[in-house]
Image (cartoon, rainbow, N blue to C red; front, side, top):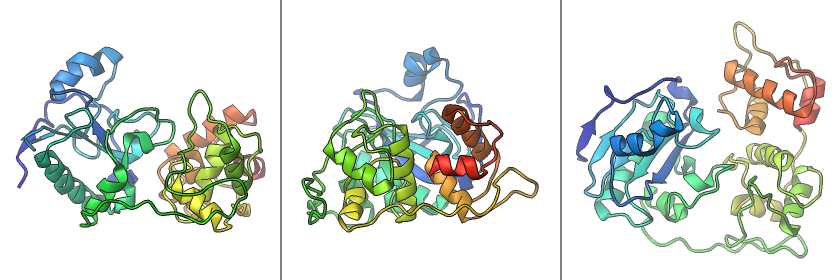
Length: 307
């Protein structure tokens, strides 16, 4: 069994969430040769004005795990994704010990079982939408493969191109919403498939519709167009605009349904099918950015702008 150093009763903390909100496990590296929670807190996090640290667990080179927070605590691991994510960090900078990998596998499998997640729900920091980083410094395809019990190397899977002029394979670049914006013919291919404005610029609208596309076709919902998305496009799949059927708003008891899941996917919040305060806040933020009435209610106008 992995050795645990439990500091949960001492770490600074603020916001919490129900465990049902956790839909992702994130792997990080510290980008340092050493350190623990307190070194990271005093050396960086506290100076940023954070009320809570970055990780739920930190794994040292000898495989020891520093348990920093209960899973219901929202930490500051990845901007805009923290309410749905459980964060595990390995101390190191792209190179990790066998003991660390063994501990990571053990702790991740335990978290997957606890939160009802699959290997596809375990992502590296850089795989989250909006992230621009080298973290976690490892091929996450191999990590996920290892979690299935298969230790053999990941083979690049070639997908027969169905779209003229664009090669679709696991070597296809990852398209994400970053600054400066990613541009190119491959972005246009994605935009045509998801129904976005075809301008070759991977911006907010394209990311939102990619999320909807991923939700509709059973892919990892992260707003990033990678091998899965290009494979689905090569197979001829497009985004079918969901039909508007009812007014979505925060009520008591809370509204629930697949249409709410579709809205949550496109807004990048936890997908639980309940129209609660987090979903309402995300809708208000979207309405404000879109220049339409800000009321937190998804009516025909908001629905059409979302999709």
